[in-house]
Length: 201
Image 1 (cartoon, rainbow, N blue to C red):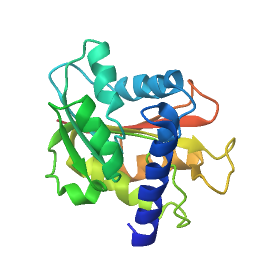
Image 2: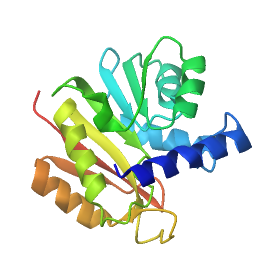
Image 3: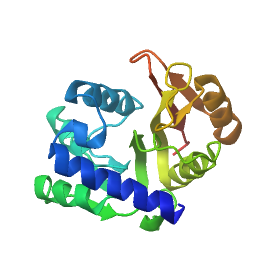
C-alpha cells in the first residue's frame, strides 16, 4: 500500500476512535445492526463451527464476537492496519490472534485459513481504478482453503469522493474471470453488495 494512504487510514481511525470510542461509528459503520447484517451475509458463504477464519480489516474484531453470539465457534484471526483499533480488539478478545498491518504484512501461507472474510476494508478511496482492491482479493483467495467473501459499496448508489465504490456486475465478472466459481449477493442493502469466491478443498 502507498505509505501516504497507509498513514491517512491510520490517522483517520485514530481520530474516529478518540471521537466515538468503542462504537460502530469509529469504524465508519452507521450502526451495529447494519454491521451485523453484513457479517451475517459474509458468513452465509458457508462458515461452520470448527473452521478457521481470517478477518481482513478486522477493526475491533467484532466479527469474532458475532460468531460467538451465533454459537458458531470458529478459529478466528484478525488483521488491521490500525494499531489503535487492534489495541481495543485485544482488550475485548484477549484469546484470539490479532495482527497489526495490511493483509500483505501478515505473510500468510497459501490455504492457511478455511475462509477469508472482509467487511468494509476496501471502502477507502485509493484513486487507482480498483488495482489495490484486486490485489487484496487475489491474496485473500491465495491464502484461503474453502473460499473468500467480501463486501463492497455499490457504485450505482454510492458516489462520494471520500469512499471507493464498485459496480456489482463488473465486480462479479472480474471474480468469475479470475477465480471461476463466484457469486453475487445484492439482496440485503441498497448501497452494498457481497462477492463469494469458492475453492475446491
